[in-house]
Image (tube, rainbow, N blue to C red; front, side, top):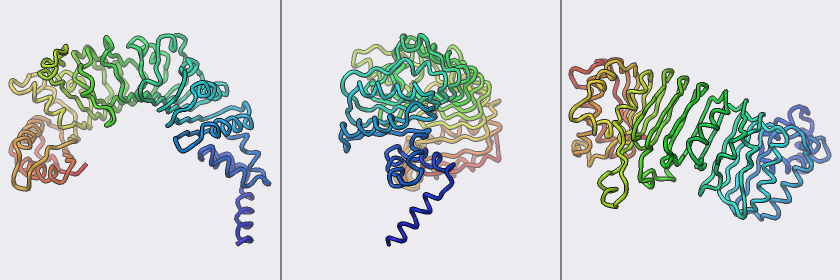
Length: 415
């Protein structure tokens, strides 16, 4: 056993020196330190000083004092060499002053990829405004909950992110639309924007303006229910002419003054209505969403369209009756070749279709009768029961006479 261990150690130490930084950079920093210590007689330990990537994570199974001491030791040993990537995840309470100091380290060393996931903290913590003026940043990902990270006007007053290509904001609180527009305007080559659980409903308006964007994702996760927010956005504007991929989840807005998606190829859309009667019963102000067709007809270049069942229901809430002529015109001219529909309704058993399932079938039929270029339709059910109900509906749709695209393929899958 001893000779085998020595042989393994020798083989690892004999690896080409150029591989050490690459191997260590893929490991969590704590693991990388352990590896370097195991081979301290070789040259691996010295390579710790050249680590280009640091990944720290703190959770409830660690002692704060030990974690702070470990991080300080790593940073002292590494010194002020240039840093490519820095990741910090906090899942348990830790001193906010230490975190503020820690975030300064990558900013002082020319970091290109910065990921901060702060889900718990104690004491005072304010994200440094330097994050938004870090000229070397290519990727910036900020994730939190309970508004532990927020962005205000002072933070973006001197914003300057000339190299930023990817921006993620996960449950980050942005003060208002002016702050958001200012931030985007300081990212001249931004290609990907991801906004998760963005609480922009209280803004005067919601604007996404960027000529460089290629991918845009605005969604709510399962952890935050949209229904917790009792109003729809008052006004939503997209001036994003070069976006190729769009994923969008939201309540229907009060209005859509501009929807510029002239390059869009693929879109996944989930639009919902607020229950107006419920809000009126609670004595709350009700902002009625605009006609959902205003949004759908604003993505006229899309080729592959993903719709959730509730989006289809929202559309038919306005379509029936009457069906707007401009909506029919859009669907006839639509270049959509692939349509995927998620969250199908549940049937009782095979051969017995519920009222909701029958209505859903009629709604899908409405699309099939009007979309000339449609080649493939995929319908996803969440349970075996829903798949069974949808399978029966799909069988009827395949037999449907007069489809706009007679050779369209229809399939049912479980999500």
